Image (cartoon, rainbow, N blue to C red; front, side, top):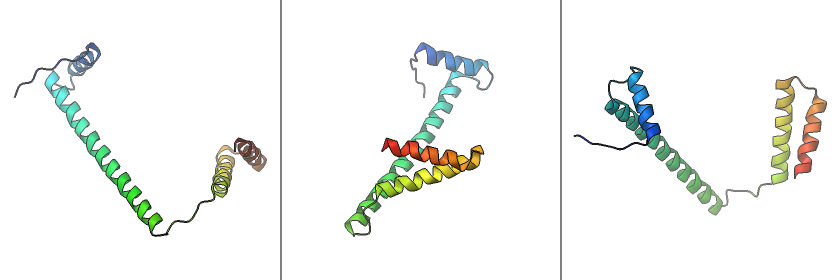
Length: 110
């Protein structure tokens, strides 16, 4: 099968560069490879979307069945800030006083 396509100048240049580099023998090979990568990308996107939809459906089922508790956002933020401050102190070699300064600054944001 033969198919003629028009490309913008920038894409045409990229195709020609790939052929000139010796990686591909022709523009057709470049386009075939690009389409294979595009199809792989679409497969990953489709699988990711399906997983997300499944997770949402499971969450809705859990909520309807009463298996979900009300979340305390302030407590969740506090745990996250504490964990981040501890991680920052360990990785940066900063004293624990710096962690408490970080926590104080982030508390002002809420």
